[in-house]
Amino acid sequence: MKTKLTLSKSLGLAVFGLSALPAVAQQTSIKPDKPNILFIAVDDLKPILGCYGDKLVKSPNIDRLAKRGTVFTLSYCQQAVCGPTRASLLTGMRPDATKVWDLKTKMRDINPNILTFPEYLISKGYSTQGLGKIYDSRCVDNDLDKPSWSIPFYKNTDDYYSKQTGKPSMNYQSPETKMLIDKYQKEAVEKGIEKSGITDYVGKLIKPSIECVDVPDDAYSDGANANKAKDLLKNLSKKNEPFFLAVGFVKPHLPFIAPKKYWDMYKRDKMPVAKFQKQAENSPAIAYHQASELLSYSDIPSLASFTDQQNGITIPLDKQKELIHGYYACVSYMDAQVGVLLDALDSLGLSKNTIIILWGDHGWHLGDHDLWCKHTNFEQATHAPLLISAPWIKPSVSKSPSEFVDIFPTLCDLACIPTPAHLDGKSLVGAMKNSNLKIKEFAVSQYPRTTNSVEKARLGYSLGEYMGYSIRNERYRYTIWMKDNFRSTQPYREDLQVASELYDYKKDPLETINVVNDKKYASVTKDMHKKMINFLATQVKQN
Image (tube, rainbow, N blue to C red):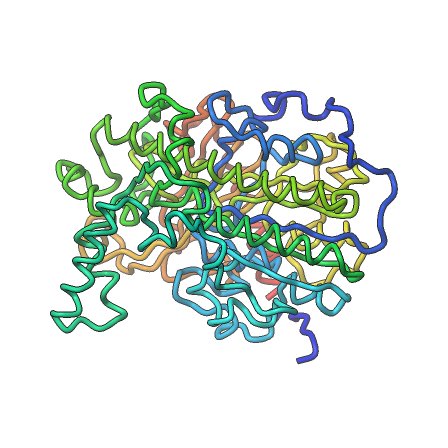
């Protein structure tokens, strides 16, 4: 069993010349003894950013951060869903070590001695504070993982919302939507529905997937949290101890809600609808899902009612464009809040002594493969942005494969504190200093599938508990699907493998064909399979 350390108890050149950009005003060649850390988490953010080569999106503030630091173009999450990927990132451990694979398992209930990065920093003399979405609340305690914070996690930002609008109602600010929410809440009470069930009752009747209202940024939670974070930075600047401040932004998570001015940045008819909206040829059905997250919004089921396949979700073109428009608007809205943080750092003189890291917890399907949301091992779900700025390291672009388990050791390295020996990742500092350095051969992602009786019959498998493991190098992705509730802590058995996939991103960037059984790729398949088996073997030894 791997020992858990406890406390007292490709894009590359498409990234617009960032490696050649001059040092910014806050750049310094002097490395501080204990740098501060601003830790920015973004929900459902895929690499639709200017610094990742997207020419349509408006992301000037994240692009500004990119000019200060390193952009990791081949960065991947460990599991493409909020709770598991955040638990993995913040502990530096893969999901099979954290044992968090879903949105209901409490991280410390199943693994009480696990160590988080902010928890570790407390033992090194840091003040650790957080607000917004850092962990998924369903996977930690009511204090948003109490051991992680030297000061209790900030849950209440009521005073930071716009005085003009007040707080949103179930995320929404549209007067019509708020009126209906109030109506259905009263109706639920009259029906005797328990408090915990009122939100579900209302959501089935009124829960639009988008909202475009002319309101200020702080009418919604991300704007309010940016305002609060700005004040926290001001207070922290007056203290002598190093700080770790974690700020989590919710957008571009569904529902796609942003002030009207961000919607106005884009034209609906220019929205880039996915070019390939079919399942990949020769791909296994188990690789897909039915977009249950999107279907939970009240305006979606009727639009998708004519979907006739058992996986994916086909919705009309105009609604696709509306959703994509909303996603882009939310990215720009969130980007503006990042700008609030960067401006605060600069105005307070903190930039020269602060590491800044920004990451999206996973990618997001916008209609490719007839998929929406995340929950797969495909590129659009697992590929996520990662930017790290240390003022004493020149800006660059790294094409080395990287993973979220690498963040814990990287920040330890940058902060000049010992790196716990049990972590699953590697420090990326070498790649920050030398853009040609390759830290690892591939990144690893995984995703579980639980099938119902109908799915079992359709797939021909006797048991409905599966795990897909996927390795991604600079050119290929190789995925295997294992049955009988297999985990990497067990020795690999060929008889448990029910399906496999291989995609060539040089020839087929849209993953249109699974070439795992193509004779032309026989040597590649053999090599990638060997790499997979060797990786799994290391996990058995460590656990």
